[in-house]
Image (cartoon, rainbow over all chains, first blue to last red):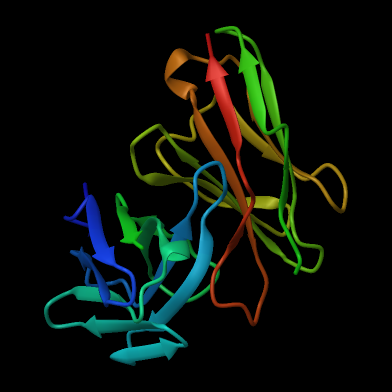
Amino acid sequence: DQQVKQNSPSLSVQEGRISILNCDYTNSMFDYFLWYKKYPAEGPTFLISISSIKDKNEDGRFTVFLNKSAKHLSLHIVPSQPGDSAVYFCAASKTSGTYKYIFGTGTRLKVLA
Amino acid sequence: EPEVTQTPSHQVTQMGQEVILRCVPISNHLYFYWYRQILGQKVEFLVSFYNNEISEKSEIFDDQFSVERPDGSNFTLKIRSTKLEDSAMYFCASYGFGGYGYTFGSGTRLTVV
């Protein structure tokens, strides 16, 4: 029961270019979405979130776009830096904050210097 | 920056033994969670805990699992009789109002042999 899917297991991008990570979900009850970044041997680190009442949220180099009709969200990183190399997890929840998150399988981003 | 602290970082145990994984959530957080990640797979929800009781649990969280907040600071996950398939990274997380997402700890790698 894969309610949250990240279909690209890996992505390589040149330093300075845009990284676009994609995520699809199936449950229309989800109304809060998050991106977490994970380095090896560390826990996931919160990156950015978006509520279903918005279609875009921006924080510095990171922008998340939400297309509710397509049940699709994406994370844009501009410009990409070598330190961005990590596994990125998309997560969805039925409401902000307190409810359980359903995670995707992750996309490993490698930013090449 | 406040942190969620997990101990031990790595635990090796014999099949059938009991293990207790420990977590110290962020001090003013009220919602606590355990997730796990089997190697190469997605991060999966186990249980959420609020107001000294379980608020939700997954199918994974069967009778072999229990959680406890024995004092004002610790939050523990106990596995009564470990199985080989319990080998995974276990992540504790906490959430406080006003935040945008959980804060995760660095995880405990549990290896059942």
